[in-house]
Length: 607
Image 1 (tube, rainbow, N blue to C red):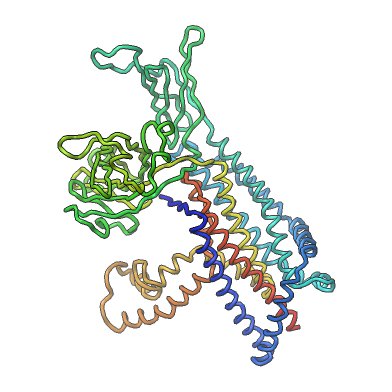
Image 2 (tube, one colour):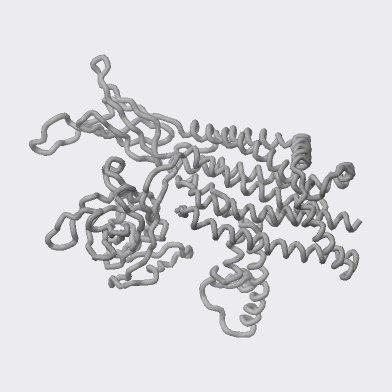
């Protein structure tokens, strides 16, 4: 899986974020107003409902402007004490037990142990916290109404808006405290679970054969001891420095010194596991096998159409155009090997060959204005293995004279644009690529801060569930409010799927057509035979698809508020992305608060 992390400047995402916020608040407010009118109409009739709704709406605007912070804080404290009485700390104890047992089952010797540990702690925390606040927010207010505890509160000079806001803030406060504790414990669990070292002795190393006439100390190579089900290849260079090569997504430093007449090798802690890459992404376009522009690559029959494929041994190429490339972003003292370029390429084989050897490919750097090209690398790609290449600052031109080209002077335009061309060199083999599969690694951010951002995503999901749960609890009974909140949560996680199903972007057509294909085990990609049956199915898909589309637009997309994949796959969560999500969450929360207030006010008027 590849993660794309957009890094948008403040002034770029803020207008669109505010527009999204206004659209969410406006659309949800209108929907809630219509729903309130319908509910009151069932009890009092259409005319009385119009009068009651208008009165509540007018009084509500005044009521919302006169909220007392002191009373809100007092009601929040009551909600916190109520949460503790409801044994919310049991969830924390369950979390500790999960981590204790996870230490037995999580394999630190897997191919990507950091990804495994981080995905586990973030996912388990998310599920546990969301389930907890779902019960708290949806069941609390109906329980108080049923036990008449709320009647005591209402007799005091307390507004309905303060009751709703106090509940939301109180549950959010107890959930935040719980998340902070879980985050600290999870961070320690991950760091300690992945910490390890290896042993390297003189016996493990052998001298490397040198070229004829080469003088000086003899470099050595070998393997380290077996720890956490893996070994590293060890290389000790002539200057008495060394390293343990990349294995299972990490590597180790190696220091060499003399002690008591013996050579002692000291292996450092694992590096490269807990990272937060800051990538620079480019825009992707394709060339076909004749080298002419193409909309996309070849479809090799894979049902997952995320990647397009390049035919090997032809002029087919994938071209990424990067912007903002400048020498000050990649100074020579920080990037002595060149500009780091990371790839995660899919490989489709028409015949196996040497599976360990990989498929050969080449990288070329091109100036998009002058057309000057320089060959960067010949490499071998393996299936979805992250490959790190370095674009040298001095490259050989593609012309017959083989001139030496300076990267920033000859291959990067004045406005900072540069193209990277990827070819598959082996005939009858294919490279699969998508736009995020190649990026320039500008720098690494703080992993601890990025880990905290992962928990910020969980916090955003949590406060959304609290807002929606409190909103439904002002109108519905406890069990029904909990089911409605759960339905909103599940629907929010499948919002993107519903949109694609409604618009026919998924293989198999719309909802009814896809259901028919599923029941009859028909092919998902072949066209249905023309006739009455096909016409009826497509006609039924239109209104149902519209309903799914509207539902997906109203529900918050909970999946978009999760940063678990970003953190687990080692990508920094950009401030622009966080800003977008915070503004979107604020829009839903304001709408839920206003709706909850009017629901509660309508309930009181109905009495």
